[in-house]
Amino acid sequence: MSNHAKNARFSCGAIQRRPANEENPPSVEELVCLRGGGGVGRTELLQLVVQLYRHIREGNSNGLQVAAPTGVAVAVCGGVPMHVYLRLRAGFLHETLSEMDDAKRIYKAMEGGTRCKLAHTALVLVDEVSIVSSRMLTTL
Image (cartoon, rainbow, N blue to C red):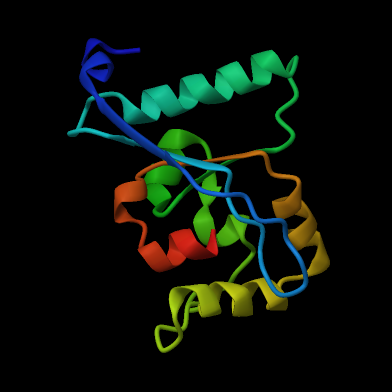
């Protein structure tokens, strides 16, 4: 980790976990955000978390997803675009609905394989989360 990463500021909060059902997507257990200026080492830390996850699981990365909102961020972090992770086409968000209603609508329309993948995801790492809309995070 770079020396700058040691000066990065962390903030975290817990959200009550809610199991998935036909109407509602699974909710998150914990949301941790790492913030800091350019070059402080956030992406480097994300890559270290991926390595640690794989090490703890003896090389297995099942349940781990790395995603990013832009192609450049995807290339740097080694993940996939967020809409690809969710298997959604461009323009899938409906701004006329509330964020939660939109997330529920999207979840109901997802294929069974995508729902299964989401249900078995233990950790989602999102690089460049500061440019992800709250609507996309609600969907995620």
